[in-house]
Length: 179
Image 1 (cartoon, helix red, strand yellow):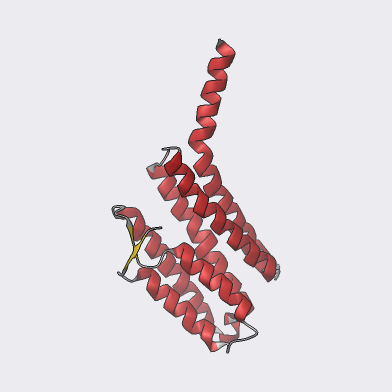
Image 2: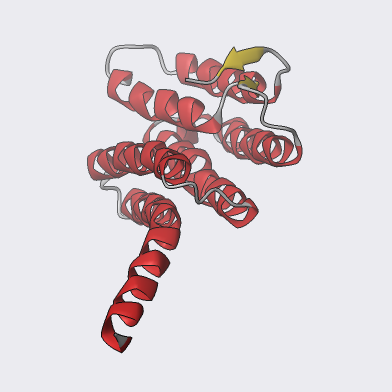
C-alpha cells in the first residue's frame, strides 16, 4: 500500500512538472545556441534555436492538456523565450552579418532584444483572450534565425531592415489570433 501511494505521488509530481521541464529544455537549447554563436558554429546555433522552438511549442500544449497551467509556468516560459528567441537569434545574426555595420549593427541587435523583452513583459500582464498583441517573440526569433540562411543571397542591409521590422512588429498593437 505504501509503495503504491508513493508511486502515485511521484507520478503526479512528474506530471505536474512536465511542461516546466519542456520550458527548461527550451532554455537549455537557447543557451547552447548562444554558446555555439560565441564559438562561431553558426549552423549548429541555428539548429538549436529551431529545436528550442519545438520545445516551446509543446510546453504550452502539455500544460493545457494536463491542466497544469500556472503563473509560474507563464513567467518561466517568458524568461526562457527571451534567451531562445530574443538573445540567441539576435546574436546569430549579429555574428554572421550585423557586426559589419559597427555600432548601428550592435544597436539594432540590442533594440531587437529590448523589444522582445518588452513584448514578453506586456504578454505576462495582459489577459489571455485568444489573441496575441504584436508578433510573438517565438515567431520573430524563428524568422530572424531563418534569415541567416539567406545571407549569401540578399544584400547585407536587408538584415538591418529585417531586424528593425521584426522589433517593431513585436511591440506593435495589432491583434493576431492564437493557433
